Length: 200
Image (tube, rainbow, N blue to C red):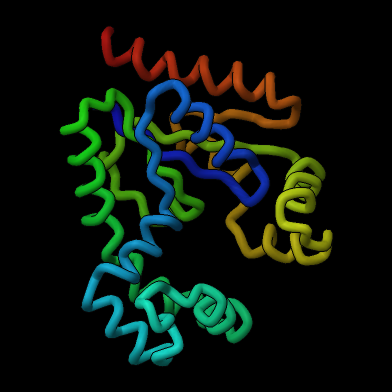
């Protein structure tokens, strides 16, 4: 099974690329979704969240109180504190999902993460892909998706790494400044090259 990591800034289109690959038959795992699963299912993580962020971190039914945690992390500047609890558990959780995907017969496993380059262990994935887009396109997409203001989006972009300076750290770069149809073609070409290189 081929393993692929996908990253890119907010509004770049990395999730759209992953959706296209899922339609082509890939198993796609989103790091944010995985983190939420870990927060709910890992007893050690749950206890640490309650200890640090209060019992309000979870709703009465045991589900994650994402609004409370987001407020604590982002509004009070405690993102690193939250990440320090959850991120160390993600590699093992991702490996388990990878094994499940392989057992189910998937040819390609895709891991989508905004912090992929920060947390990637050398040699842990076969390929890494960076999705890039001009800032104007990114702002417009996030405006339509989240109903956020331009000022808010620019602040979020500033908090992320400069992905344009990370092109030499990845195997493939997909530039997404055109139409959805153009992105689909680019994504399909890259996906087919994974399969071709494996056969070669």
